[in-house]
Image (cartoon, rainbow, N blue to C red; front, side, top):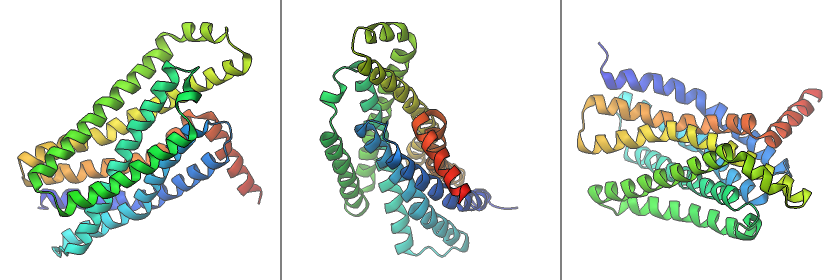
Length: 284
């Protein structure tokens, strides 16, 4: 009979191979659509672009490295350099997406809670600085964590960062959802007291806030199992846990595939741009 770890690795190689191409192509289309969509506010567009770039890198870099590493595991040929590259890229992009989703949730929280002050508080320049700082932090942290940090201390840091991000994004996202749904009438009544241009802005902020809530739900479904398995795996290393770890890691990659689908499904301006682009390609 096949060992449990092999029973997990072989299907995961097949799934990851499918995800490589589809994830890369779908996120390329998403990035193009975001760049062409003028109706999305610039701060939100930058945050979504950052998340899409992370997902694109997952399809172009992280997934191929992961497939190569899993093939090496099947052959029992565990070279150090491919292993280090795989861990570095996966950890770097994992942390980037985690922090990116947390910042996106915070942005939508400000948008739905303080809609009339949103443009004053969340400026294009501030968001660009935050995104650049996030990418730099992820790169520096991943290098230090991979090469200079003891294993137990590394686990403590990862646990602190990830649990904090999960708690913050959950609080922000559910507050956004409750405010948009339960207090919708009060929100609309308040918007009627301002200018018509502001009314449109308020409605657009509410719709985009609900759209990003779906991004959060899928993110939680894909990332939380990996976090739980990581914590258990640190305390109890068995073949069965290695199987769960492999499956949980693949679920994280699935998130990069699903995000463009959510953008197209829940964000009308992006969907419209994507459809127009596809029609243009078909006509050519």
